[in-house]
Image 1 (cartoon, rainbow, N blue to C red):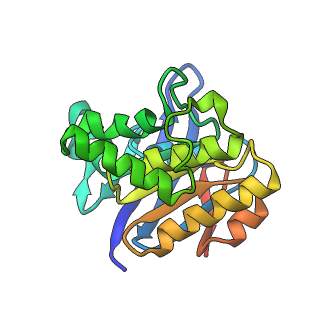
Image 2 (image 1 turned 45 degrees about the vertical axis):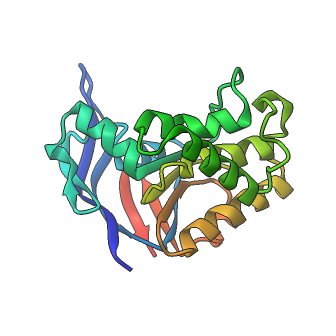
Length: 226
């Protein structure tokens, strides 16, 4: 499958009187159809690497390529547009807006991108939620749903703009075993559909075993990738 995301010599240092290196000289490549887990000890740089791959942070040195584009050439506005169009995010805490309905939460990224007419945005949002087993929850608020349901809404929102890559940070960290298994199954299915990649930071060994690759990070470096 074709490459969608690549890191070349990526390092991230927090400046200060005593600089802190979060990520050290990382090289990796992610392809369509891959379900990739990132693991490592607490404080090893897993989430820092994910945020760099998701263009939420900028490397101190090195380059990140997304869909063949060297993102170091993009300004802040270009990075924001690229994130909106080509990346989807799922976090441990779903960050759904409680004042909006489930359906409206999924519409929001499409409204920001404004590629579809409003009616088409709502139609796509509804179909995504139906596909994720939430067709009877469209008009509820997030605080009326279970934790597993909220995370499925977050996945629908991440898929709204048809991204190339879904990036997930501990997506099952707050879920019970049954809900975790469901989220793991959904993310695996998204990747193995072949059109996009899923990259997830996880402490859950079962989640990692469901993936095609496990990238292990220790002290900000890639210790193993396979």
